[in-house]
Structure formats: structure tokens, C-alpha cells
Image 1 (spheres, rainbow, N blue to C red):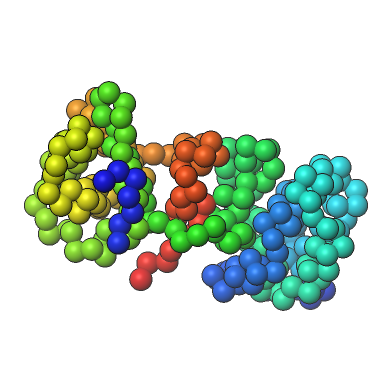
Image 2: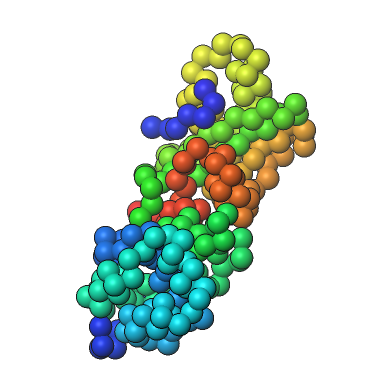
Length: 254
């Protein structure tokens, strides 16, 4: 049951970047090229239309940017040619994404290689996610430190669970008991469906996408911070999992 998944010279007007605009960027630029762009714009740029010129200048004169370009193996003339031909909407999407990137914490900005984090860039829509993104993640940790993960593919608010009478405490203790029984080798009828239902109900009751149910802590539910999940991601502990709000954008509510 564990580790399963449920079923260019012109001024760019300051409008909100859309998923379509981000898609233009993702289609035009590879992940490594975007890392170079972000490194070049790390100090900001006043106008999105200035991005191609600013990146070209940074690559020419900034050793830190040159280092990033060399590390990721970017062909500089190709990158600059792509930037020169991007439409205004795509340039604004980069501008907006870089503004957001600059407000993140250091642990979000940089990956384990100390280059601009591809996970963070994917969350901001500047890099294409590496697969379909799950809505959330529930981790159950028993008092003997055994764990089980439930990947929540869908927003529980759309699953019709709100009418269920189970309290948060009952849902958490029930999920912990279910996981313990499964990991101890007991046969529990419909265990996957029950487990995902309880995990989804906990997410609905708490409003948290990422959380851990801790048996040693009286089955308390603890929210997992983005920085902690990024650390797990960088250490390879998430097994390539793509999560909304971590290494993929959050989907707009239906």
C-alpha cells in the first residue's frame, strides 16, 4: 500500500503572466538556459524588454554568470538568439518569474549544486515540470520510525469528502493504525482506498498540502515546510516525484 499514487526593443506592458505565456518560455528555453538567464537577472531588471540586452551584458562581463553557463553547458550565441526572438508576453513571463524568484529564501533559490534551483524555476513556471504534478503528499511516521507515503493526486476539496463525520484526530489515528497494520503484515480489506481517503480528509481538515502524521506525537499532524521537501528532493528521497508548489506550479482552482 505504501508509496502508491491515487487514481525585443519594445516596452512590454506589465500584465499578469499566464500559463500560456509560461508555456512559450518553457518551449523556447531549456532548463540550463533558464538558469543562466536567472543568474544574469539576479540583481533585477526594470523592464522586461531589456532582458535580452541585460543577459548578453552579464554573460560578457560577470564571471559568476559565465561560471553558470559553463557548468550547465549552455551555448551562449544560441541562448542570446532565442532571447532576441521571444515575444513580449514571454519576456514578461520571465520578468515576473525572476521577480518572484528573487523573493524566495536561499534554500529555495539554489539547488545542491549551488546553481539556480530547477525545482524553484519549475514552481514559478519558468521551466517545464518533469512530469504530471501531484496535489499533495501525506507521510505517516510510526513511533519506530517506519514511514509510509500517500501521494495525493487530486485536490480533496473536489472529492466530496467534506460531509464525512470523521474529526481530524479520528482521521489521523485511523490512518496511523492502518499503516501500522499494513507494515506489520496484516491484511486490511480495501486498505489503499481507505488510506487515501483518510489522508485526503486530513488535508481537507487542515488545509495543508504536505503533512506528516506522527504516531510518537499522539498521532498529531505536522505541516511539512517547502524547504524540507526541497531538501528531500535534492537528496533523491522523493524518487522523482513532482509536486505542486514544490517543483511544479500550483494549479488554478477549477
